Amino acid sequence: MKVRLSSPLQQDSIVDGEGIRMVVWMQGCIHNCPGCHNKKTHSLKGGFEKDIAELKEEIAAVKNNDGITLTGGDPLLQVKQSLEIASFSKSIGLNVWCYTGFTYEQLLVMANSNPLIKELLLNVDVLIDGKFILDEKSSDLMFRGSANQRVINVKESLKKDRVVLVTKYIKKKVNKKPFIKEKHLFL
Ligand code: SF4
Image: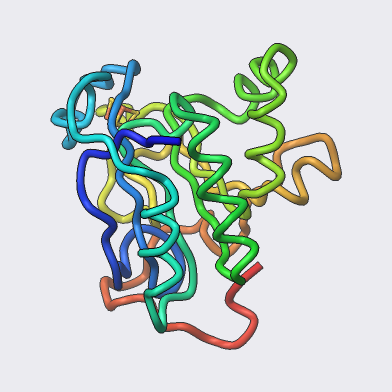
């Protein structure tokens, strides 16, 4: 299976989720958020194709990263590939974060006609959902660009049948120091 990416696998990111993370930059987005800072990822035919088996080997070879983040672009537009990457990452002990321009509620509706979306959610620890809204932009938010977006604990949300936020990220940043890994930091 091939996945369409906008950039090679990134390592050692401290801004795309908790801890030190690999980042998979998926190509393709349909949301057209005004003010998007990543327009080169929009074209559904842009970027380059990569064999998922090769990407998995690269992921498995990375040392000292805590998790993996699927972003882009919108990873939900390549849901089969995102599921493959997320489930593999979980199988080797990585936690999985995923960014999407769809809301959590929209994804649940979409999952009724595409069960792969539910499968993907079952393999995602934290979902940052919703379009980027320029009027709600703030540099003080943790791991999200605009205040409408939510940092969602997916497991708890599915279990309780309502959106459960990761409470420690509801508040604004208190400083701009790099995020340091602490005990019990991960879900
Ligand atoms: S969802 Fe993300 S990548 Fe897509 S247009 Fe909005 S900000 Fe840009």
